[in-house]
Length: 335
Image (tube, rainbow, N blue to C red; front, side):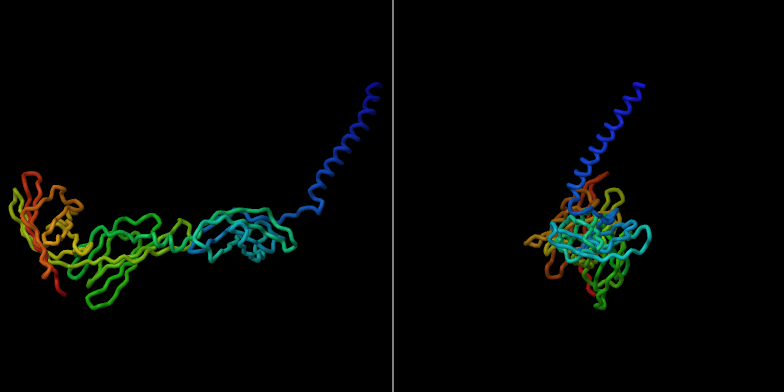
């Protein structure tokens, strides 16, 4: 009996406390919806950006976006914006792409909202993206040629260093003996190339992606190399086997007005190369390049004739069993 009386007293008190709590919660809620209940539209989900040339592509998902009519993107702290109309195509999930163009070359934080056309919009979604331009492009260099060589009669060969990760392809341009300008596309998988009926000049440019997922690739400036064809004739003296005569055509690269690079003697197949530096008195310093032994030294005077363009080279280097002595004459080939 006493228990029943206690319960009859506690129950009304509990009801009063519950009603008071509900009133406080309602007052608290009204404080934040005094202008009406807040309605949010479906936000864009799984947002990704893709870099481009003075543009950025934004891609995302809209799930069950029945009421969405527009997508608004803000950038530059809200001073710039783009409104895109949206029409639902699939019942469950739509993939949406928005292209922001005419951007300055820099990185951006994009604020993305959806709206229903009645003043209601989604919560903000942010995405970071970068637009690239001429500053990036001017910093690019074409794929490097490791060596130039004579592949066959009137055919110049090129061996490339491996392509970089973000290279897309290269273009090689040259003039053939008939005066025609030819352009060859070079995939990144190509390690060597031949230029048939080669006449003069090799120009290269390479296309790069600024990021793996970029929507645009960027070309480097053309870089032109003057590659001359010389006829080589000489003698290689070995301390054990004696003299070995050699005669061949060579590709000679002009690095500047007084510096050239080509194969050393008949050892180009082994990666032996040399750099020829012409001094004001037309003497020539022969310097080792590539696999040529670093102890290469003069074996008499090496000279250059500016009238004929002929190099007369005398060098030696020490290895097992003694010195290897080389005498070589390089004469420009006429067409």
